[in-house]
Length: 162
Figure (cartoon, rainbow, N blue to C red):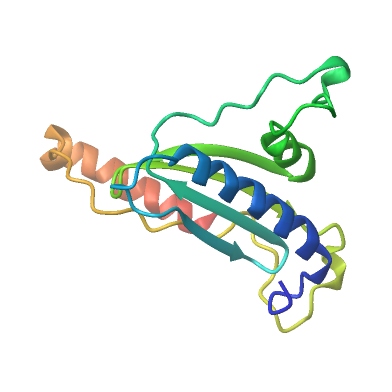
C-alpha cells in the first residue's frame, strides 16, 4: 500500500484480504488434492483490487444477517462477506477456467484522490485489465464477410476518436 501511496487503506485492505482468504481456505477444506488458494493485489494509485482464487466453483454464500441487516454478534463466523460488502466500494465474483475455480474480489477506493502525487499516472476509469488465459473458441462464420469486417474496422476507428 505504501508503494502505491495508499497507506490510509492498508488496515481495511488487510482486514478484507484476511476475510476473503479465510473464506477461500474454508471452501477448500478437506480437498488436499487441489492447489492452494491464490491472492493478487492490484492498484492504479487510487483504488486497490483484492482478488482471491480458490478451486471451488460454487458462488460465495453470504450468511443471512440478523435483525437490522447486521450479523448477530453472538454467532461465530458469517461476518466475512458482510464486512467485504460494507467496507469495499464494490465486490463480486467470477468463475475461472484455467485453473478451474472462482475468484472473489473487492475494490477499495482512496477517499482523497487529490493526494495522488503528480508523477503517478492520472486516474484511470478502471483497474488494469486481467489477461485471460487461452480460450479456444471456434471461428465465427462472419469472420470472412467483407461487410462485417468493414463495420468492425469502422467501429474500431471510431473508438480511437472518442
